[in-house]
Amino acid sequence: IAGITQAPTSQILAAGRRMTLRCTQDMRHNAMYWYRQDLGLGLRLIHYSNTAGTTGKGEVPDGYSVSRANTDDFPLTLASAVPSQTSVYFCASSVDSTGELFFGEGSRLTVL
Amino acid sequence: SQKIEQNSEALNIQEGKTATLTCNYTNYSPAYLQWYRQDPGRGPVFLLLIRENEKEKRKERLKVTFDTTLKQSLFHITASQPADSATYLCALVPSGGYNKLIFGAGTRLAVHP
Image (cartoon, rainbow over all chains, first blue to last red; front, side, top):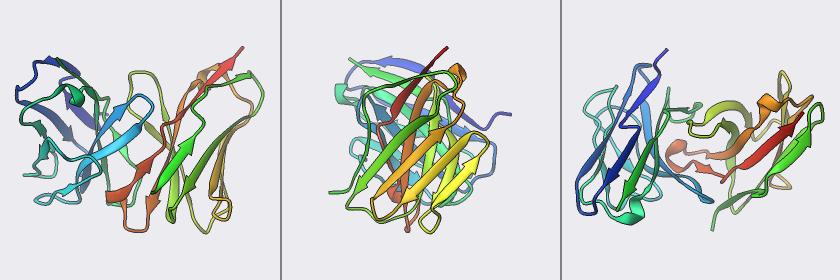
């Protein structure tokens, strides 16, 4: 059972570099999401997509972009990484915008 | 502003006892509420969902209550086991859907043998 696959699992990045976190799901879910998780702050929504071809901004979208060219893939791009983007990033999906979320195992990103 | 609060202090209990975790929210009208379990270094895993018109939901040793008057949900694990040790997250889902889903920071539960 694959579910949601994220890559890389961990990355150290120099400030100013461009980085893309990959997310692929094999459940044919319509909705996909990117969250960041920081100690004491909980999960915060960065961007979401209710269906292929559409995206929307979450609570903390600045400095991030996403695309949803097909149902399965939802990459998150940091155009020019900054230290405040050091976090653990989780990709998630749901059948629609109201069902339970299925999460990947996370990508730990450190920006120096 | 909208806020969802969980006890930031870890909850330590003895094996076999009932663990009760609290989720409080303010300035929010949730359509329903969810509870997730998260183990260290892993992604959250869905446990239970309760709707605003439901007062209680059960699943095996788990029970969730939802009081929209008190703006509070309680999550109970009966006959707790060391394997139940994890961080438990609550999340509020508005009537508009997941676009505005808000997670609490989670409460860590440690069950001691």
